[in-house]
Image 1 (cartoon, rainbow, N blue to C red):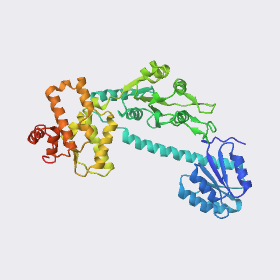
Image 2 (tube, rainbow, N blue to C red):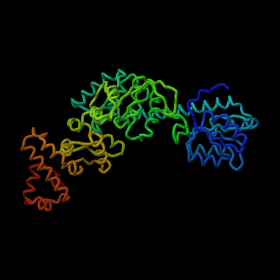
Image 3 (cartoon, helix red, strand yellow):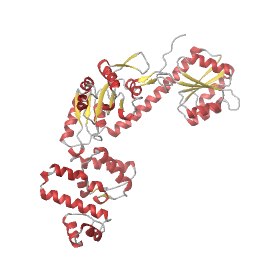
Image 4 (cartoon, helix red, strand yellow):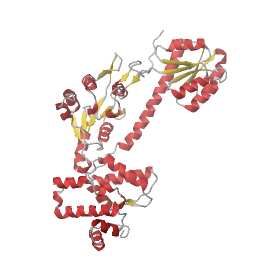
Length: 467
């Protein structure tokens, strides 16, 4: 029999009330696929709701629920499942008509194994293409959302200059920086500016996948390679062929997987889990970490040879506290975006509110700022301005600012300005604790109410009364 090159090993559900037919189809398919057989439409629907199948071979004539009704219910549950109708030769007209109901194709009894495999191959290729189109559409949306780097700071301009230089190459890039600084954004920018832009950009967070499954996720696996491996799987490296793969938090990989990754970087080839065939692909490697890999190398927790292979082009994503000038740009960008997404109409951020945002050290970086603006839009009202009094308490008075002053990081502000800033934040905290009641606030601060009113005016603190 001529060998067919099927796109992948699939899970196929055979539905037929005749035991001989089920056995014949299973014998034809079981060498290349994971085959499940049931004897009626109701059983088929139960299995489809509990398990994942790539294809269904469905008998046209069955008692209780015939093939056409079963087909309708399968499509009503999941229209992406392809169904091939199985019928006797004298029912070919009905089988052809079933295509209007959603069947992909039909085959007739008695079976010709060659014809069956040809029809199945076409169906699986169609299914694989649909999955790829769905993935690529997701990638287009993803890139449209994250491809723009918003910045006017010198530190980010340096990063952008490096991106422009390395994008045309296939050199490995190691992106470092704190969590939330936009490392994936940088990786995506490299890909979209490169000759590989029309090929997949596949991002993997190594820390989000268990150590038992990460190798299979990256390189794929063969059927039976481990418990639960019911079919052959294509890994992310194979899927990214011709494009770019981005491994975030690469420092979490175990040493044995680091060795396999090193071999890929050296030879541009790998083997699947449980497999023996060598697969060659053309993939550019981008990696990121929020830890110092050089320290991990010295401690013996990360391979030095892999580190040097990854660190061909180093890029450091600066934290937001070193990009103070970008805070208004980013805050207004997020405000506009969430206004549109949530159908809201917040008017903007007041100068006092922006001053609070610029003074805050943003330990969670851009992601923390994005989350804050989303929260403000969700909880805000149309035509409202985001002022300091509606911002979270932690932004108004945070331990980090005191810590920075103690370290001398704000010494250039001068003693008078630093004291004024501290006093303003201290009074704001007290006002918020007392729900902006000035009498209670003065009592809490142990000062006269008139003194408090004077300081509110001098420090330009906006309250409900003077706003």
